[in-house]
Length: 392
Image (cartoon, rainbow, N blue to C red; front, side, top):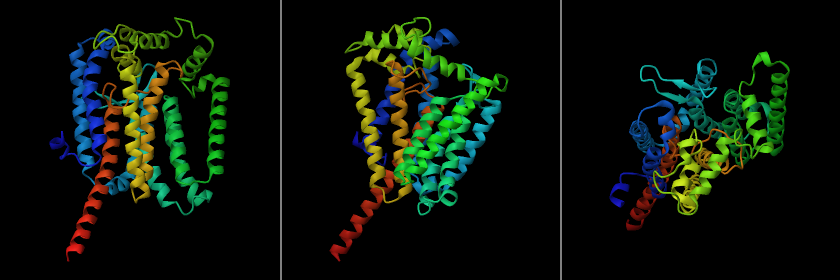
């Protein structure tokens, strides 16, 4: 293992966890796609091969990024933010609709799709981290400091919320956390959150009063998911997805049904993504589920640790944002599958069937590893200079 890791710079523990999860995703995706085969046709091997290509692309990008200095990430953050806004606006008007949600952009000629929000999440975290550093001396002033930081968050989340409320809410909460850590005055954050809730309530009222405007095309879906979980928890027809997910977890018991032997995954529409955790527990059991949660917590700890060790505030904020983003996505997937949260579209980082989410997760980890690599290089250079001084 050490021979291979010598080519991978940065945090060795993060590399091991990442590679293990990506390798395991090949097994789980092949096992969890029967429902997709039924709906769209093809064979499990077709989807495995497609996922394998995404894994290779993600690994290649991650390896390339981790060799670059993180200062280039900071320099490109403004371009990344503007590109994210452009993609979200394009998606808003011309996005490809899947399951009544226009979240996807179709790539010409090759026919593949990606979610612009996946790119926007990382772009926003990096851009806000850079802006926080630039404005750290004037964050107590509304015009000069606070608005340049909060405006990008409101813009990105506002463009995402129309078709993906859960992603917008998670991203907004993570951004507020980064701002709080960046020492933005608490009262400004409180007023922003309160204003955001009030604005959302007003938009909902307008949507209900003038349905023809169709401001929130997925509002009824959000309402049904929340109310059905609260009022009709035992209604088999209404809550089929949630109940099947919980039943799959129950069938998994402690050691699971075995690889490929799960039955309820064939009735979960997103067994390979949104309901990944339920399918995982059904086949691999609760013992494996505990190990999986532990791996995500280790990943979070190592990422936060890298950020706190950095002497650059931009790197600290970026690592914290990325770490919380990865853990929040995994946590929501688990909470949905266990029936604690209403059904929403958050998949398991590094494990769910590949696409834009997998690639952007690899990009995120590549950025973290580039920060860790820089820290190791500087430490080695300092040690060499100290030794040379001692010898002389």
